[in-house]
Structures are given as C-alpha cells and as structure tokens.
Image (cartoon, rainbow, N blue to C red):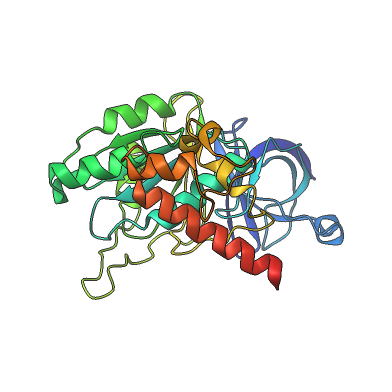
Length: 297
C-alpha cells in the first residue's frame, strides 16, 4: 500500500530527505524520485513537498513533487525563508567584515531582509562594540548586540523571529549552535570552541536543519562558513549594495562615479569626514577589485 502526504523538508543528509508531516506530527525519511535527477533539480531543506509512503526496507517513502519556491539560497542551501539572521561575534573569532558584507549582498540580491546580530558583547569593550555597530548603522539592516552565554538581548531575537522562517547563518565559532539550543532546547546541538591559534571555530553543524520555535515560527541552523564568493555581479553593480553611499552620490562630479579614483567624489569626501565607515568602504573597494579581475579573465 502507498499513501501520498504533504510536508516540509527539514534536513537533507546523505541522499535522504527528512520530512515533517503535520498531519501525523512525525518525521518521515524519504528518498527523491529519479525524475529530480533527470531534471537536474535537487530538493532542499525548507521545500514544501508531497511524498508517498512505501513498503521498501531501507526507506519510508519517496519525494514526489516540490511546491514552487519563494526563494532559494545556495549557501546555505535552504528554501522559502522570510529573513536572515546573520550572526557574527565581537571577538573570538574576530569579525571578518568582508565576509559579512558579502553575505549582506547575497541577501539583498534575493530580496531577503537581513538582521545583523553581534554576539559575545561580554568580550568587547564599549568603544569596540560602538565602532562595529556604527559601521553597519546605515547598511539598511537592523543591528542587534547580544550575549548568548549571559542570556542578554535574546528576547529581541525571539520577537523578530515570531511568525517567520528565519535562516541563521555566520562563520563557525560565533555562537549559532548555542543560540539554537536557547531558541529550541530539544535541538541539543553540539557546541564547539574557538581555537586560540587559528581564531576559527570548530565546525559543529554539518547540514542545514529546520527547527520549530513557536507557532508558525521556524528557523534554520546552518553550517558555518569562512568564505563566500559572489557570482554574477558586475563591478558597477556593487555600489548599489552599499546604501550609505546613496546620500552622497549626488555630490560626485561624474555620473557613474565608482568612488575610488575619481576626483571630486561625494562618497570619498563623506568618508574623509567620518560619515561613512572606513571598514565598509575598504570592503567595497576590495569587492570592486575582485569583480574587475573576474571580468578581465
């Protein structure tokens, strides 16, 4: 006998798709039909689907169809998210602002609202915290500061997540698994430590997984990453992903100013006056340089 049901894929591991079925309040282990391979389509965590139960010995069912997606992130590989909570640490590991900016660009390209959250505020003094928060105050994203260890500021995260599907992303060692355990205690995620020598966290999350954190409230915990390459973006486009530039661009002498080598540039003047973050501007210049090299080769 077979029975078709509907559900949501909550994780993908080793060719198996684990599907939460609200109808019977349980998780089913399934494989995907061969038609997906034929069409070069890969179901992802977060996909709404139909699946059919079978009597096979090593599987409990097969994914039959995938509902149309609202969106799909490639890294982390998750579908149908409402917002991204990007978690970085004030220290241990040191914040990689270039990596953060790349992730913000990826979210903006897919029209996914992003919230920046800096964890471990107990490890940084007020001056350091203020500088980093100020750098992103005009980035177009809400900025939060918390200490997961000391349970400080976590209520604001819960409030922002209410009624939405949120993807939790960031480098290893910044506290994603600890935050997941707070938001969803039954998750019991393994928590790693940051190496003193490399200033990198141990990878404890190995696949994207969807957790329930309240009524109609879900979040993905995702593997950490240490690099992110932007694909398919031209050098001229990059400035549009830095909203703080827009206010000063009318003061540029040249239309289409790239804000790097041109004279009489409103953005560079604002930078010298301290109105634009030096870290954000340096990150912009680096990204433009990388995009120029790609176009050349």
